[in-house]
Length: 598
Image (cartoon, rainbow, N blue to C red):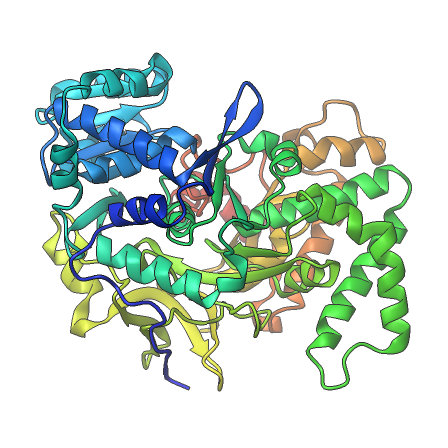
């Protein structure tokens, strides 16, 4: 199939904007908890009425500070209640939010605030304030800096005390559906980030259709979502706005190092994450089982869960014997895994990168249905996702209702719909290229099956052509290799080379445990063990698992273990954890050369 579409399930209000949602919630669900925040270590709920009042109070402060309709206001913070509050307050002041990753360098802060022409910026902490101050001489439009951990919210409440309710009403209703809601700068795997212009219509079309298609997951007064993704990323904004649109109770986590504890205390009914989160859950559980001498039991339980999930998609369903095994392991293993996620979660949504088919079946088999989706900043997050009642593991689902997905002659995925962005801020050339012929050109390669389910096979610009002329899409094999507990990242190489090779980094979280189990010196690092026979054998097993997913010509023949992990700080990952392939290739050129000469 070359093209597929679904009718819209949600009608975008032509004369409205996103602040309508919080006013509607206060009117229709005044006493329903829509937000939760930690107060002295305890989750404390806010009703729809209370949240609206807080948003309006902060919006008054922004207005009193001189923020005008259409002005851009930066937001640099970890994911938090204050992030969500400020976002809606900016919109309620009639302005435009410009999110900046809290890990951004001063140079990146300067580019984003300068290119957008931000007149003010809300930062979380002193480090963020220092980054802004270090480049402030280059930001002539910037007039205000507020700092959350220096009581910025209270400061704005006080500043806006004299602003009338009528003024806030006027500002809140100023923007219409086609006005700009936010400018989200892409992470930028190459070059400077481009500012994606997203309107209120984009978010209504995106979040409205996602919520309606997954309505059983969004039950007002019952469902709850814990947001631990970066709110600066468009996927995080989907969670934020979608939760308010539903509405359901939304909690936030600033530090994912505490994620397990937060899941246990918040007990969400729905979580949204990236594949690496689900890989970590699986690998941590398996490593713990091995440490407790129960590794074989866990592996049998995992195999049973995968077989059970796969069998449910067959006409006859799971056999009697498989059902008995599955029930036994549910008591021994699966229930404990569900408890790690809070004990109430039956569904999760995964996006941002491909999830392995085996991992998808594993979670489905233990009682957590992970609905994989696909999208980009330019599509306001998801442009395809698996429906809750007709999931196809191994695909990223059907198009967002109200949109069209087309496969071009060269295999590129093209998208059309109300959720597609308006263009790149101050960049007409890039806009014209991305939106050629009325379609958004994603740059991804994919296929549609007979039911309109999309599968992504790679990035158009990342296709490797070996010396033998074989086209290789790195994503398929990289995802399989990265699923191994010891592997942090994998980058396939081989463009113009006689065979495919790979650079592999070791997950430092699991290396210590693995080293102890295999009699390696305490404190061993990837650098000290990269030539160790046991570690090489372990990584080789991950390589072989990856090779099983591709043809012989596409398989990895040789690999090199690198001495350290790829990180955002090292410049090798974007804030959304995508590989900067050109930077890795440049910085590790000698390692790549060694694959073909050593």
